[in-house]
Length: 416
Image (tube, rainbow, N blue to C red; front, side):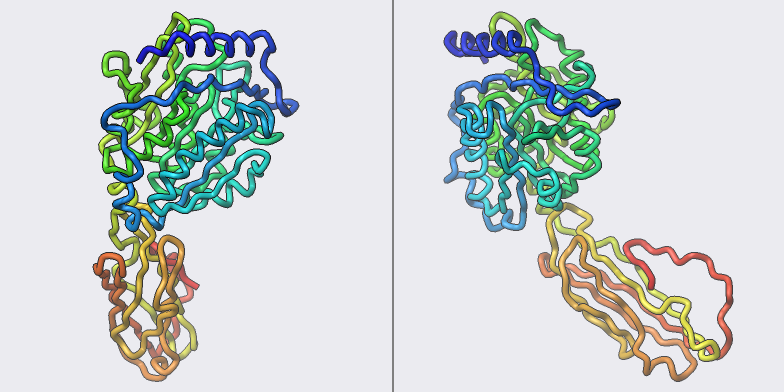
């Protein structure tokens, strides 16, 4: 856990430099919360341990994870091309190498390529979100959270509102306050304040359904955490496997807004006082396989019912749009549809979760004669071979339809 003396000296100089220069207000909005962007703590040297995973030990599941997506963001720390910024891009590329070795599709947003709208678009369905850059404080640091991008700060509210991560996403941050400590701290802030900062920084990602939040000051931490995760460790196990973890100094609790999620904070003695520099919040007992490779087709109704009046020449419901879901994880599933019943029309007959739908409607030829028609729709998951059966029925009646109907409500479907 202890750093070399030369490293402690470098950190102390970085902190003193920040304090002497003051913090920079980048584009605070009049009348709203006032953001400040703090230089992140200098990253520590890479740490090794006997069980540190290598790429050769983390590529065995590359086919299984090939459907996953990652968004990588590096903000300007000492300008777009400064030495520190370039170093953080290099540190992020260590993580990118691990992700790409697993077949994960990586999208990079390295300064000055920090357009928030583009990041938001890329975040749709992303399983990993990694950020290295300035931390952001609001209202003179009681409140913390967000990103410091090129010419713009992103608030926690914008993160919670705009990002559309895949269910159970993994988030990793290197920034002031994200792990508790910050470059402006000149003494031990204490565990209560450290927890409060981590709670705030993690909250918007957890609100978007993230299952794991890691924050660490060391340059190779993202690479190592990902290596452990892809090697099959649980989220909590990956945190504990990192060489800088110390069971004697870690503080264990839960996130107050999400009491089912563990919240662990660890610390190091930097320049003669404790700094909180390694944090985890999430589903500690789950693996990436549990979170992303689970496959269970569902989210569909058990039955669909149509009523057609020969008198009114009208339907109660003329068509249903059914949206199959993977109810076990964020893994996309390919599905196909088979039909038993000559009167049932389904289009399209193939698709992929989570957003593609198929529409069920009767053929016009079935509407000529009064009677009750039945059939089934079988939705087959091409990934697992499992299937879901939906019963369908059509009542063709020789009487007027009722003019007042209760709303039609069914899980995973809409009417048109």
